[in-house]
Structure formats: structure tokens, C-alpha cells
Image (cartoon, rainbow over all chains, first blue to last red; front, side, top):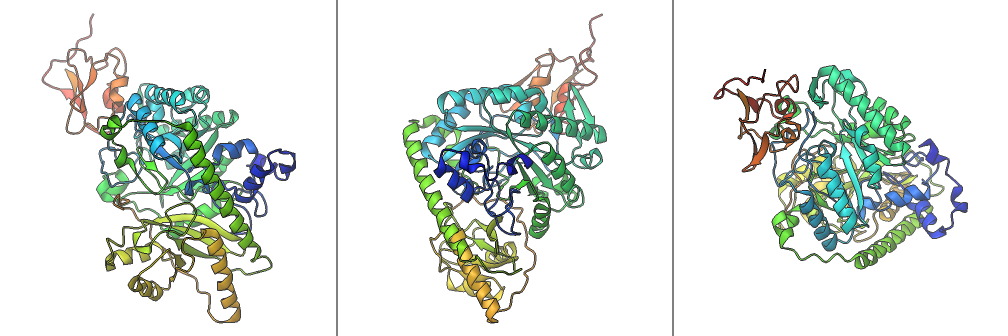
Length: 519
Length: 74
């Protein structure tokens, strides 16, 4: 990131002023700037900035740009079932249509089926810009299937970005092939750089016809991962590092991991909470290893957020997920349905649609900037979280009872910064509130001062107030960040005038269960 | 003997298929099976049977006692 920071102030030399203005105004690889007063991507002040060529790569990749994830969709094709390592948080036997976690799919695809599926989805969902291969095993443990799929898609849908997500063991062997297919985003899951820690996470790795166990296995894995990371960044391929936060195993150690990957040129670090429900049958699920709380996760992410972009919008999606992050439309695109579809891949109409999306983004950024100016001159140490019910496009456009997740923003005099999301079960099943579900929602956003919604019923409203969370519905269908800043300004005014007292909130729970498919 | 795959445990991940030096493994009815006529237990190829070494589920690629021990050609 050092290198990126050096590009600060270089915008004058770039010809496309409009693109640059947008980039300067809204760039964030991971979160909006603000919070502690420094941008989440390391450059000073509020306007994080990226060199044009990097911005071009990330601007419509929902996983690499927090901002983009409100507007653009991704899909994964499950062409890579085999894996070459074993992780204690993974159990490949468990598959359920309602389960949203990596390593899980409902059906495997051949490269040919995958290519057809990509065309079918891209024709139906014009904002689908990214095709990833993430398993359900490891893409590079299935190199023929993975690269055949890339080859077919590059031919038929050249505008779609290709990316893959790997454990890294086989990565050094395939870097040149990856570069050859113009894959410009690669994610490596790196949970440790100390083999002693690794031995607690990986029971074995399979390499060069041999199964290695214990510290030896972890040493092999970490060496290969870091070598692969270096090789990719040398070639200008953007690398995201995923790390699973396992309290008591690698939680403190992930700060070291962060330093190690940063020094090797990783673009983005994504620290995710361990998913370990006993019913998944994973080693960690069965031995009672817990996942982190929302505040534990946030504290670790905050401590790693120096000069490194932190990703906080990861939904830990399945290897066959389809749609915007946080939604999964894979059930609409089963092999059976795809094969029956008449696919008309219209590049022009996709471009036209995406141009409209860009207009929306520019409007959103302008609105935020304008509102941000009203905070200028305010000085306060208060930092608080708010939850937002949204269907996407950066708008407060979801009914409280219909929200499947809430996006969480941290507000301070520096502005509004996206810091995560909280999954909740459907609270409302058609007009009637269910009390247990409301409790689930409150537990999930218990660390927030307010919840912004398009609409909310009277009962949940009063229960939220009782729980100390202010329901806010006066910004329905307005931009999230602009509204949040306006609300925060008002909050500060009330605190300053003594009308209300600022009280810190407690911790919140990270839901382990399935993302319910029903809408 | 030869190895066999316990069908009820097989996740159908296909990892074994690519590793078998004898091309003895193929997919049948959703899971993978080992052709006992082709399996050599990897004797002469590798230190350990590859299917068992790469299989993500313990005790799924196991020795099939129904067949006599593989004898490498002298």
C-alpha cells in the first residue's frame, strides 16, 4: 500500500478528470473513509485514492470494492470439487440449500455447464460483472476444470472479470497460467504464518503425492502461500487475503499475518468470523470452538487497518452463489433451468444498464460529500454504530421486518464508514411480527445506537426503543451515507445541548445460521 | 487386495480420480468407484495409496479384503 499512497495528488496528470473525481470522491477498497479520521486504505485525509489502472480493476468488483458491492453482482461456478488440504472449519459432506458458507454447493458443474450458466446469469442480471471460481474444493487442485471454464467464458463473455479463490498450496505452479487468462483478482486464504498455529487449523495437506500432517504440513502451506502471493503481486495481479478469525487459535496471530501479507503486496485483507455450528459437522463445530463476537471481529479489523485495505463486507458466500453480496439467487439457475433457457447475451444492453448504475453511484457520492461538509468544524470524540436495512444501490430501501441482514456503519465527525453487516433471520413473515425473531435482530445489532429503515411497524419500534436502539424511518429511500451523516449531526447537536446523553453500547452476536433463502 | 471407496461416505469431490496412477477410479451413480482389476494399492508408484491420502473423509478409501493382496510383477 505504500506504493498506492505515493499516488496521492497525482490526479492532475490523469486525463479523464471525471473518472478521477469520482475515484477520489468515492474510492474505498473496503470501507468508506472517515472513522478515525484516516481513510481505510491508508492514505491520509478523507479522499482515499488509487492509481487509475487499479481503480479500473476494482470499481465494479463487489468483493474488492465495498462501494461496488451495493451495485454489482458476482457469481461463483462450482467446477472445482477436489481439494488438496483439510481445514478444521470445513466439512464437505454438509450441503443444504439454505446454507451460506464457503465449501458448500448444491450441484457440481462441468466447465461447459458453467459457461452456459454464466451467460444465462449475465443475461438475466446485467449488473453481474464478476465470475469467480472458489471451489467447493480448491480451484487449483482442479486446474484443468478451472482453466477450461475461464477459457470458455473469456471467449463468450469477454466483459466479465475472472477471479479465483485458493488455499495457495498449488498457487506457485499456476501463476503464469492465471496471468495468461487475464485473471486480475486472486484471493488466497491465509490463516497463519506460524506453522505452530497452522497445525491447529490444518490436520493435513496433500502435496507431491504425499500427505503431510502437523507442523510440517503447515510449514509447507505457509511457504507456498507467501511465495504464491509474491509471484502474483510481482505480476500486477490484485490479491485479497482471506483469514478466518478463530478465537484462541489465531485471533492475535492475525495481526502478524496482516503484516506479512501487506509486506508482500496484498491489496486487501478480509478477516472473517469462524463459522462453526455443530450441525455443520466440522472439527471446530464439533469440539465447541466458538466464533468471535461482532465487537471482537471489529476490534481485530480496526487494529489491522493501518496502511492496508480491510474488507468488511464479505458475506462468506457459497461456492455457487449468484447475485449481489448478501443475496443468493442460485436457486433460479440450477443446471436443469439453465439448460432449458434460451440465452441471448447482449453486451450492449449490459453496458447500457451498467452506465445507469454509474450515474447512480455518482449521485450517491455527491450527496454524501455535500452532507459531509455540514460536519466540517464539528469536533467530538463520539463514535457510534448504526444498522441500515437496504436492498442495495446504497439506499435505505428495506422494510425492517423484511431485512435479511443489516449493514453497519460507524459514524464520527470524519463521516460514515461501512464496518460490516449482520445477518438476521427474517423477522416478518407477512405482516405479523414474531417476538423471538425480533430478539434475534436486537442481539445482532445490539452494539448499534440506531437502525435506519424504509418502514417499521409500531410494535418492533417500541421494543427497539426499549432496547436502546433508535428506529429511524424519516430517511426512507434516501442515500445511506448522506442520511447517516445528517442524523449524526443532529445527534451531536442534541448531545451538545444536553438534551440527550451519549451512552456506549454493548456487544453483538454474529449469526452462525443459514441465510434464509425465502424473501 | 485392492482399495475400495465406501459409497455412503464419498463426497464425490473427485480428488482421488486425478491422483490414481492406474486410472482405476471413475464416477458411477454420483460417487466414485475403484476398478479392482486396475488397482495396485499404488505399490511401486508411491509410498501410500493416493486415493486414501487425498480423500477428505477419513476411512473412506479402504482396503477391500474381498480381493487378494496385490502382487507386483517380478
